Length: 303
Image 1 (tube, rainbow, N blue to C red):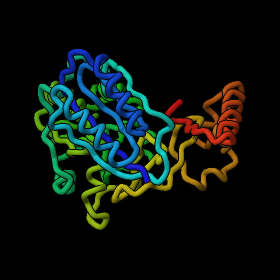
Image 2 (cartoon, helix red, strand yellow):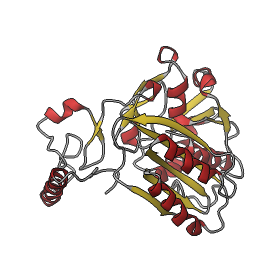
Image 3 (tube, rainbow, N blue to C red):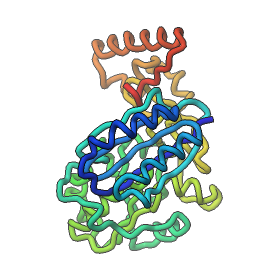
């Protein structure tokens, strides 16, 4: 059993490059896999490994400049969720492409999971899902608006085109773990929206704390690792990943005529050329050979 830790923290790193190698070395020494992003604005990522190793890495991160009050969310995975460990340097720890957005300056009102249902059921509240379209497709909160964006960087343009729909509304926003809402609520405040709220700890914290019987969540929550989705109690969900388009699919979708492992599914079969499919088949052949040699290869999250 692997312990999985999802974490992020906005702070000011003067030299994130200097933090990379010691962090990577510690993760590797502790048998940790996953991905961490470092930027001048902070740290973000998901890691997995033995519980003691996760605690050692979290202690290291908490000791970084400005990270003493780091928060994280723990869950478990039955199998190794990532093939290897990566620590990457980025311009942003979550890409929105808005240089003026600064969550350290101000963000929306945090709403605890226990108080979320009452807020989103209020008549003067509009609920917006800030995640990507393929994430929303397998689960969201009842009554939530789906911007149908392919990337978080598309959100500002979507808001500009749709903002009149939300005149005189309080805005409640949510995402997987909370990081996208740190930026999206700051963005809306900068656009003149007066009352903006976001789910503290994101969907993951809600699914961890709110009983299924009391929940307004519908479906599963997409996660960016081998588990693909989780449900209430953060129990691993039924979804798999199409390694051609990286969209979540259900086990029964493998029986559809459009499905070919690593090559296509019913979502993407018309989106790729025959040359693409030939390339995917060759990749799948290499994956099969690697598996036969007993090597880890988890396409989709590590390629």
